[in-house]
Length: 313
Ligand SMILES: C[S@@+](CC[C@H](N)C(=O)[O-])C[C@H]1O[C@@H](n2cnc3c(N)ncnc32)[C@H](O)[C@@H]1O
Image (cartoon, rainbow, N blue to C red; front, side, top):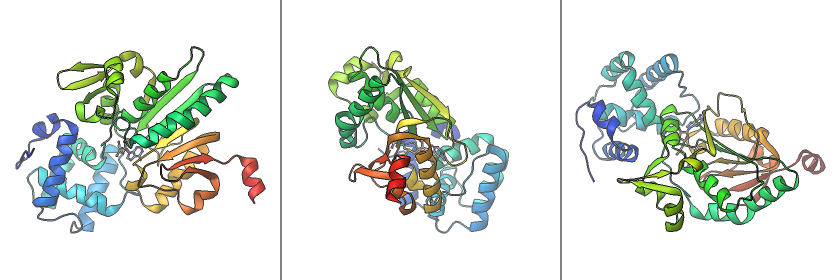
């Protein structure tokens, strides 16, 4: 489907389902670009970064510059401008546009059971071990989805845990993201059909209510996940976990920031806890000693315990 939005119409873009909004901007960036991003002047980039930092406390430092420039160029075109300077003037004055721009820069694409094979491995191998441990020690099993977007990832984990839950199980699942908009959508738990296509028919019928073209997760399952705004680069980790999923977030950052994020996650993991990265992501070389690789293809790692690190030294 192609929708053309040639003039500035924030209401039109804001009311589109999120994925469509992104697809339009991607199409525009690929097909109609008067400047594709790499050409965006550094001075313009810096001014936009300054406005977002001062007025929205949104920091661009650390993101891959080319990736951000491409999205900036797409947004500038969407508001109907070929003149970055004119866009800067608009941005300074218009809070709504600042929010729209931040939504464009933070990519919230996700899906239930995204890359299904990793969830199969979590269900067969990782979660049973963690559930068994927490039962044995009467501890709460703690799971953190970092960069959870609209909630698909932590809810997928909640669905798996529910499938194998025993009455006495203690469970805490937390989803965090930089974007308040994404978190609002996550709490609503309302998803278009494309986002739930990997959910089995049985689970869909049992755990979702179909409303029009959308599927809403049952309240009793939504209540199992707590959502918080948290910037994994700037804020201190406030949660310690047995399992952390941080998928498809590192790719937006430079190597130095990836390193900082992985170190933060290593600190937040409880001894022997697991880390799952996205398919296109790997540990930075300086962090490899902190983890044992459990499954290289699925990017599953286990935090090495302190005494294991000492023995290896
Ligand atoms: C592509 S989505 C990944 C969603 C999900 N983890 C998955 O793999 O399907 C990336 C998410 O990371 C979030 N994000 C970007 N920078 C972040 C930061 N510094 N701290 C926390 N979340 C961030 C974005 O807002 C976006 O929702």
